[in-house]
Amino acid sequence: MISDLSSVDGVFKNFQYAYTFKDTLIYSQLLDKNFVFTYRDYNIGADVSWRRDEEMRVTYGLFQNSQRLDLVWNNIVSISGDSTHIVRSFNLTITFNPTDIVYIDGKVNLELNKDTNNKWKIIHWIDESNF
Image (cartoon, rainbow, N blue to C red; front, side):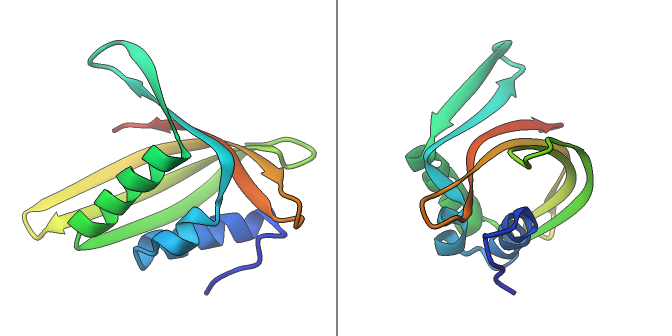
């Protein structure tokens, strides 16, 4: 089900929904206009970041090129008192085809803020996964 983004829990539920149903419209509503995604590229030994437009292109490609996405949110590792910083563990299974399945485990380190409609948006996502 699509959840109300007036709660942080709604962000995680809609995130899971967007991945399960490969719904870029729902996914786009989770990202602030100033969104930044950051991950560690171990091949070059540096952090790599991109903005909202690139995130949407990458996610669209993932949604189009996979047969199935199974995202499971696990424990919240840490959360700030005002819920603006959350670290949460997850498991993601990406099935490209029956013989090409990728398992990703890790944590998302999210910075959230409320927009003018009092809805939570992700402003910065630091990927802390094994991928």
